[in-house]
Image 1: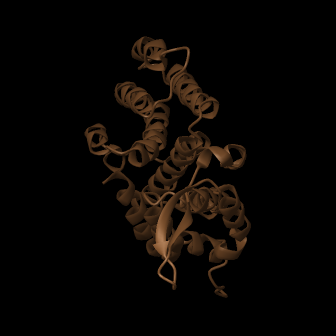
Image 2: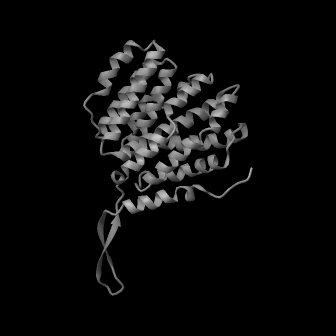
Image 3: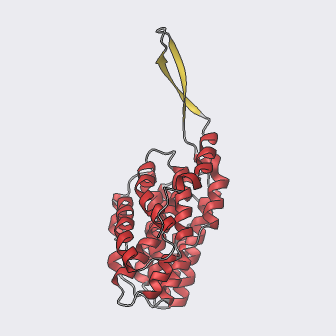
Amino acid sequence: MKKHPFKHLLTFGLITLMVAGCNNAGKKSQTTTSEGKKATVEAEIFDPVKLKDQIIDIVQKSPSGTELVDMLNQAGASYIIDITIPAENAEKMMTTTTKSLGQGMYAFDTKYAAVYNRGDIALKLNNILSKFITDLGITGDVDVAKKYNDRISKNKENKDSLNVLTTNVINEYNQMMIDSQHPGVYALSAIGGNMEAIYILSQMALYAKDNTKLLLLMSNQNERVKSMAQLLEIMSGDETVRPYFESMKPVIQFFEENKTIGNPELNKIAPEIEKVRNGMIQ
């Protein structure tokens, strides 16, 4: 297969220009001129609020993580709790960036648990989602956890009801983020959810005895990775997000260069995906 240079820098260069153009507000710092005089320099400050419409557009055009869970189930894959994020790990997510990423990652794991009829886990993770959304300063007219916890508990043995309820939970949290003045949280949540999606998929493909259908799913993840690249490039204006963008670049390049993924390609990219994902939860 012919290799290409790192194309995403060109593919998303326009976004970089748009980000730079939107970051005009700044803080002032002082420097010294060659004549020894004090001069004021305008330093750019990243403000995702100015990019809210663009962020929402990218997220809503991105493939849905919940749809991928349904595809995993249809492909005959099993539920593997060991590859999901432990609930206890939420305590390590202390910053706005890690909680925002965690919101999306735990949302995916909630749906993953529900589709495989693990209502007990879905209930526990819903409480984490509720805590994170509150910690991130996003509020709504309804307490989503209180609204759904009792119904999830009563239907935890009913797979179809559990699937619908958890989808509603995730949709309500997403709408709260859209309606808020925190588009950066929405962007990072989408990044986290998509990262967890391709991680779970890649790990299940590694574990499966017959991974033919899962490899086909892996080959169809380019649009998901592309949307993550767009969002990460936008959010890399935040210095706490920039390292995630840098670590993601090998994964972005891989999906640009490999349109069909077999076992050799899977064995190459799965460790890179795992590295990025684990970096988000540590």
